[in-house]
Image 1 (tube, rainbow, N blue to C red):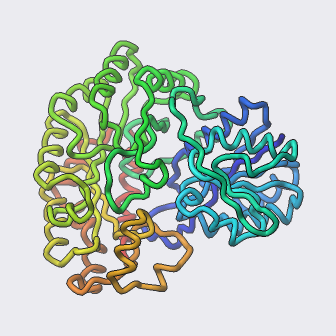
Image 2: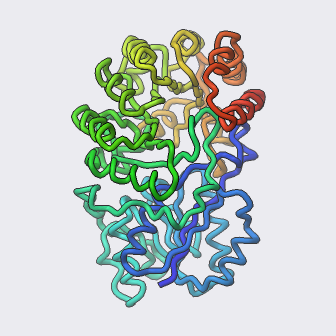
Image 3: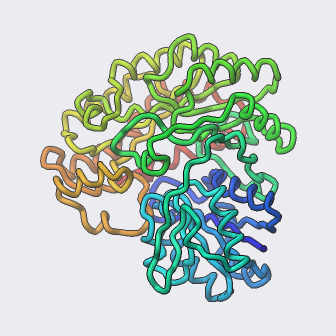
Amino acid sequence: MNVLLVMPYMDFDNTKYLSSRDSAFPIGLGYIAAVLENADHQVQIYDFQISKKTIDKFKTVLSSGQFDIIGFSVTTITRRNTLHLVQICKDVLPGCSIIVGGPYPTVYPKELISQSDAIDFEVVGEGEETIVELMQCIEHQKDFGRIAGIVYRSGKIPEQTELRPLIKSLDDIPFPAFHLFELKGYTPPPGMFFKLPLRHMITSRGCPFNCIFCDDRIIWRGMCRQRSAENIVEEMIVLKNHYGAREIHFYDDTFTVNKKRIYRFCELLRENKTGLIWRCSSRVDTVDKDMLSEMRGAGCRSISFGIESGDDRILEKMNKGTTVAQARDAVKWTNEAGIQAKGFFMLNFPGDTINTTEKTIALAKELELDFVGFNLTTPHHGDRLKKLVEENYELNEKAYYDTSAKLGNEIYFYQPDLPEKYLREAYSKIAREFYLRPKYIIKMICGIRNFAMLKSYIAGFFRLFKIGV
């Protein structure tokens, strides 16, 4: 069967600080494409992140492609645009079957299919096994009710089947179908690379931790599965030899959760002498001096930490499981190892006050961080956080129930001890205060390694003045 896989577009007019030039390789679609090709289906990709991918060109592709199946990967920030695109698909190809999958249908099953008659199926949860079985049933007109992990129409009523068991061994999943993508079209944001080409990987699914602001436990059911170090390095070699990779960005929520795997991974990288550098995300309580030294020796050049708050009481409310003292240690050790340290923080978390916000801002400036990111709390992620906000706080209803992009730059709810005027001013100025310090500017200039980095930093500088609520 002929399949078109689509990554919908985002509303950049609403983001204030992101750019349509920023794009990240859609690994989820890459995996789905790989398993479909292995099942002898013909697959094409249309990714609206890529420059010049317009709706008019999308219609042309639909008209000329004769696709049997069109699949969409949907997140919170692309939900509204997906509903628009699926209707276009049905208008142009009324006989095609439309499938939506990804994080949003997994967290909110039945919602999209209930809102659009153009959607025929939702894939709930992990999609690699489900999509292949679903394709067989569509092709042979079999009973959809026997397929685990989907929502389908029974008449006009959406019916959800039982959840599909999670895949036991991630090593058994084929590498993403990189050859189907316009890899040159993916451009990392400022400060997110040292060397180009940068390629993306993910080496685990799920997280063993339990932060209330994250929907990870819904998507992965509280389980954390990991690929073997051998399998990871094998894919890195493929990316280097066949797709020109010079740097790898690991998408994992917490790359360092398994210390034994990290040491084996670093050992294999040294043995294979790939010459690749890499960056990852971590938690401040899953690193130590020896591990960081080992990672640096194996090519790690940047680690992003979700520090979130400068107040231990707020960290407890988040159920983060970390402390401010641990953040100080982790960043200190990262710097000592010669690895770039990034810190991400949340403002307007339930319970935040002017005092706790000032402590968070002060911590960000105190730590020797190379980059920082501040987001206003988005209560749509994490069912516990959503319930907490809706039951205890006044909602900014215009924003809260808006279906457009939600990217951490909106005040979704109000707190009595955190005046709206103060919060807007603090959010608007904190990044500029951090990045425009003379000491920081000198450090960044000294760290520029090539012309691509220079251009990226210049673009990032001008974006600082767009940040606001």
